[in-house]
Image (cartoon, rainbow, N blue to C red; front, side, top):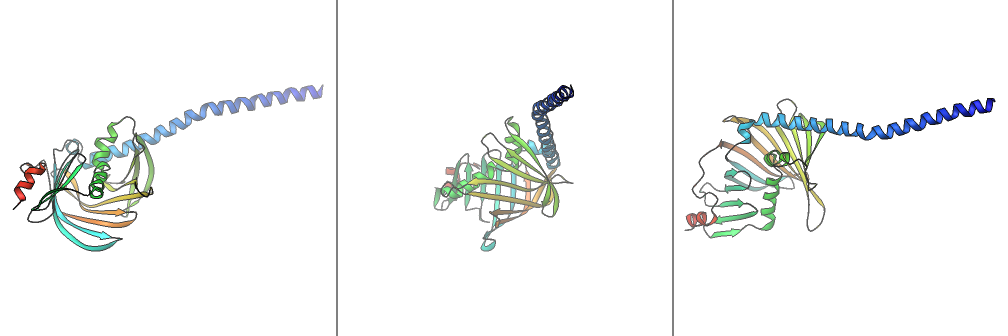
Length: 270
């Protein structure tokens, strides 16, 4: 009798254990989904705060951007001696004109997926590595992350927590698009302005991954748009470029035939 009672109680206990396991197995995906959804919303909120800090609708609807400054090159973190002035116009999403001398007689034009260099000798297609480097930066810019990636419902948002960037406490968010490409943005936890943008790409020849970083500092508000007057680039941890802005303007008249390669070549050619 005691054995039957003991077996009956054991069956109840086993049944409760099985039910508990089944309940946990059933509820775990729902709990996981809830955690992921909360994380995604937090990441989205951080990006929304960044957009608001950058100027909100005014920044989102810019017609063009003009930047004037000085750029210097580095190799393995050491200055190369390549220092020069630059004057650039950008029209989102894929039109860029960069004049690389005070005489405005060396011009790079990027139009769609093409890149051209124009000098007094005429025009030539930029070497593939130079063209691709620029296009990668443009395709992984903060502007592209907001205006393209965030509009795609397939984009995944990850809030990575807080970290240090430029000696500031930063909220870190990673966006992953439908092609499994990613952009990580670190934003000042107080001002919400971008401090650092990071992406990776795989070398087509050696198949290893490369990491590209841009850091932003010295913000000045120009026509309602906070603008970084300092920008530093890193490739796999080594500094490659520094840029210091003298002047910035928005929604400005463009140079005549700004993105017409042949017209620009005809004007420069002596």
